[in-house]
Image 1: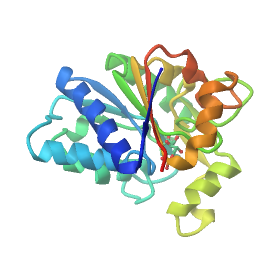
Image 2: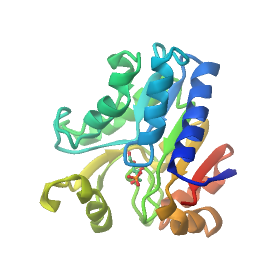
Image 3: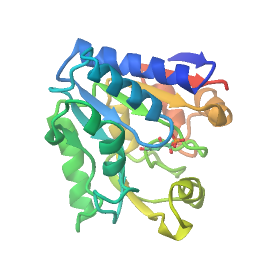
Length: 235
Ligand code: F6R
């Protein structure tokens, strides 16, 4: 595991975009696993700028996002599809059909979970998976639990995650209580993992990376992955 500390969010974003961009340069048809949230916004801005300046080409890239809320329309400003279109997909030359998120509106979420897991496999697996980390150690929407979930599945969000996510909604009652997420097993199948974390995550990052490996701290499983880069900002 490589751990890089940066002095601020901007430096973290520049480095993260550099690694994601290098992946695209090395393998133009690569599969990127992507995340939403505040951590990756700066990196997405940077990737969009590089694409706009002709230094990166996303025309053959395929993307799979970690997760999506249940019950939100794709054009709902709180949906992860909306977030990704706004922060990245509409700003780079990626064909919309190459971008994938779980369908949180599916009537049969179990079938949808299976479809999404199979889709990732059929794309050849994820070359580089970008992750953020929750204050409780969640990755994707894999919350602290008795076991590490293996596959894409539906989750009930914990109170602390609903609280954390409510900053993006007008009222806490509007925060969806369920989501579809890649499982820990799905995430661990990625060939490379890039975890980015703001200064507010220093405590949980320390616990996850140097404490015991336990599903009570889902990100701790990353200690077992052969190719993880962590970029953590100090300030
Ligand atoms: C987002 C996701 C979450 C976030 C995590 C950190 O798709 O799966 O695990 O990465 O909650 O969120 P931020 O970056 O907003 O602190």
